Amino acid sequence: MWPKSLQPTPGSAFGLSRTLTTSHVHRPGVLSLGLGRPMRTKYDIRIMLALALAMSSCSRPTTPSTGDFDLEAASLAYKPNPVRVGDKVVFNYTVRNNGTNTVLGRTYQVDLYLNARLISFDHGTSDLLPGRTTSYGSSGGHFHWQPTNAARYHYRFVVDEQNTVRERIETNNVLEGDIDVVQNQANEERPNNPAAEQRRSSVLVRFDCHWPGVAEL
Image 1 (spheres, rainbow, N blue to C red):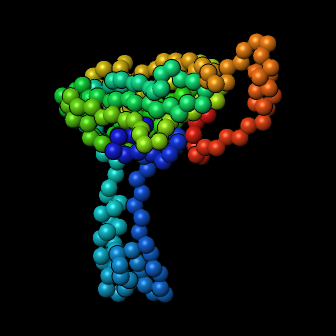
Image 2 (image 1 turned 30 degrees about the vertical axis):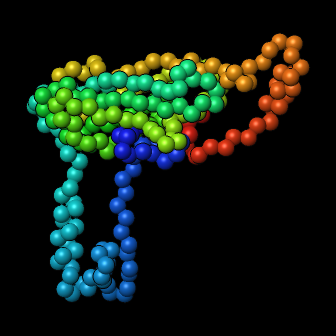
Image 3 (image 1 turned 60 degrees about the horizontal axis):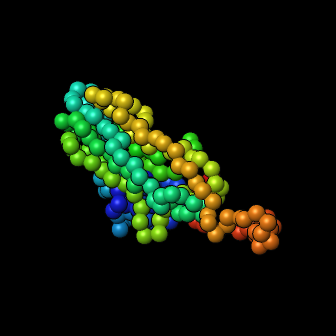
């Protein structure tokens, strides 16, 4: 999901969100841009129009069509390993620019899927210089996924999924593989064990307490 200095909300399946907040105070006949004072239409309308024009000229940057660009989904690891039912799983993954030119920020995206479900992303990426990497992960009690069933799950880490950057190599943008989730040892049942039978009946009623947005598959 995120550069280690930019962490998502606890258990969130969503990526980094950058929000600009302004306060607005409206009065009759007065326009406000949240700049700490009202703007009177007679004198300050020119300033407002100039700001609006400047903001309208801001657009998503475009990576030049010519140049040596090569984004690579360089590595992916997860912990704990092996994964057991109920574990809070964190993915650590890295994007590298193998080209000789800088890939501009916001011209490419980073997405992480689990069983075709998006669990982490960065769509507000930063400039990536030649030979440099950007690492994503989570810490401090944050996690990407908490499995509730023992099964095999498929992850897919994709860089520049929209193919907006013309790269020298287009075949190294994806890393994917499988994770075998095993039953938690504390919940493993032994045959002919009365305690196990009791646990089996208790599983019929369970309560899940988690942060909204946690991927449970």
